[in-house]
Image (tube, rainbow over all chains, first blue to last red):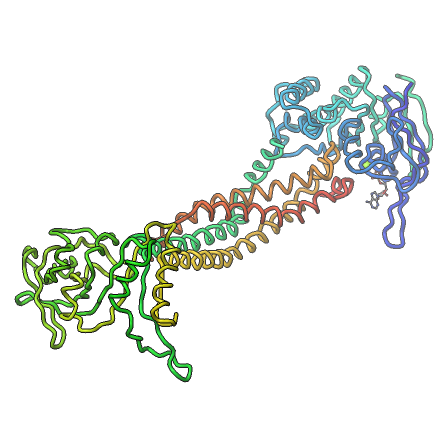
Length: 230
Length: 402
Ligand SMILES: Nc1ncnc2c1ncn2[C@@H]1O[C@H](COP(=O)(O)OP(=O)(O)O)[C@@H](O)[C@H]1O
Ligand SMILES: [Mg+2]
């Protein structure tokens, strides 16, 4: 099985005056192709920080991260932007759709940065919105959509450039349990079709959907287990 | 790129009131530049018009002023320019087509009980070939009138209206007097109304044959001026230097005469007005700078407000360059649109000034082009700093920003 992301002895330390916060304190982790990985831990354990590092939004204080065998510390801004654009797809707790754009335009945005021509962009964005069950909401703006629908648009957006891995940060955190369950079903469906997925969460309900669970606390990995149901 | 442009327009259209307020500075600046320069340009045009409508390639020779003792400027004319000088110019200057001496003076003119003041101008008949004056009625005097020293006159429309309030002036006699001088002339032509021309106001003039007035109306040897016309525009400078050499031969002192060509006058006017336009335009342009600061302010606010959006864009693949371009484009579009509105306002302003100030104004393509490109540059210049700030935002912090 191919290795998609390798996190090697990574530390992330925030200095605030005399205090230092060790958000990550020596984390090592490998994400394998095709797996559905859950990173679970209480609030403040460093999950979001880890996800941001894996998605090249941030750089570690120490250690190294490899994406498809490329060490991230060697990359400059345009190269990092390219990785965020093409290799990873982010899904956030707060959805983070651009409010002035329609669902379709939000999904098109990563393809604009990738330089995909307009017609191809449109077609792909439509396909993806249909895939997440929003074929009838193409021209709605985020404010005209429910939370569950917004998160589906966000998933479609994350899939726009066929990323090698989907990184989701508490994707059901702002949803009621029913729409949360629907979102998790979409993730499971995508994973069955071969999509590599990493979800970070504090919620054991969410964790049930993964096939490997990594537990964190205080910036360290405590344990790792394979989910039996899967 | 096109997508980004569309985006920029959209985000500007989003907050209309704020956009309008931030554009006002640029609109006023562009309008002020266009308005002010249009006045300068209009004035320059009307001066050029009055310079050129009298005729073309004219050269005026007048007696020089000499300096008095003790550094005071003496007003004494050196009375030396005479009609023989005009004859010599006619003979010796191949680049000169026509030349005539001119005597000028103010006289009282009368017809029966009507009287009026007029400038009597004694000139040879070629004058009518040199300058653009048209007849309202009758005819010009000719060479035979000149040779025979006939006392015939072509009079201006205003003078004619005053002397002959209810009738035909042609064939009537007028009396021209000044002190002990008193002569009668017969009206053979009336000039069309024309307004002030370079060196004469035809409407208030009476033109008579030079020979007929010599020793009668003007009992002196010196002439008021000599007017010559070069064969063509290309020969104008040549003509001036030929005339100069003829006159210098005689006077041996270049202070004693002055030669002014129409071209030189035009050149001076053009240069002066160009400098004036530039200066006035630049002063008005300062308001563009102030407008630019307004744009910068609004863009800084926009960047702060949209911190989260910037974070999201970076998370889905925007590089620093993308973000920089996005915000730069926004401020350029903002100032460009403001520039266009400013042009419209500038046109309005120029029309308004023309109406209430009763001056001629003219909006040239150059000033429009300059004003718009300057406003785009202002957008670029004042947009760079906010756009740089946006592009340098740390995506993680931008995403946490509420
Ligand atoms: N920019 C920052 N400056 C200082 N401390 C931070 C910053 N970002 C995160 N932290 C700290 O790092 C720790 C881990 O945060 P985070 O990764 O958000 O945890 P989680 O997502 O598991 O709740 C927390 O204690 C948080 O306060
Ligand atoms: Mg978190």
